[in-house]
Image (cartoon, rainbow, N blue to C red; front, side):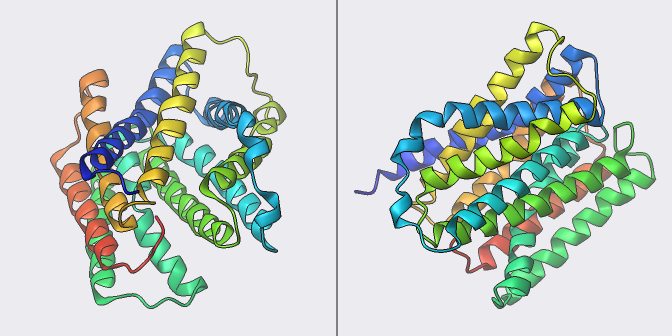
Length: 302
């Protein structure tokens, strides 16, 4: 039985707020450790997904392996690898660029999903989707102009913005691979367990191989890592996956576009990050483009 619309709206709102804390908690963890850069970003990425995967261990016996068709495990595993890459790359971007720009660029995934579906699944792009892509790219160019003119805050905005964009590409691949896995018999719960576990297995050794330790940080750092696994990962992502069962994936995608807005507000409130007018204008145009593209998309996945 479909839940009432107010409940779906409430769950989506909670999901957006939970996901919006991701960039904030990453910044708080870095400030608490007094470390930034690739090494510690890998620790954050690996810890977040590993804790989430461990919290899901009790659900393993509930997976209906007998329902899986050939290729299901392969696609779920490949999605996990892409998720690992997404977290490693996007979390690193926050060491180099502002919260507003990073979260705006990483939520452009509806555009990349549409383009990948066109290339991979041979799905036609609607005129509205193409218009949305052009509008979003215009916004992206304006943000790039903000980098060149020094309007974007961060130690290396161009690098940070490119990493955030790569984060959007990898999460788009994660979504399409997940769509393939679920089309081959995985329920959403079983799929997430496998994808998160594979992502954790891939990510966990990388900091150690890079000579970065998981120990020796202030206690507050571990508290923020736990919150990352609970709020943006489990509460946020689970809310979206639940909502998409009852309403159009497009509406869920549009709801997720409020993440940069909420994250930017929190960034201003907690860290005094104020986007320049150029960056703000570019971000608004980019998000409008993504919304147009999402509304023109015929996809049944987010």
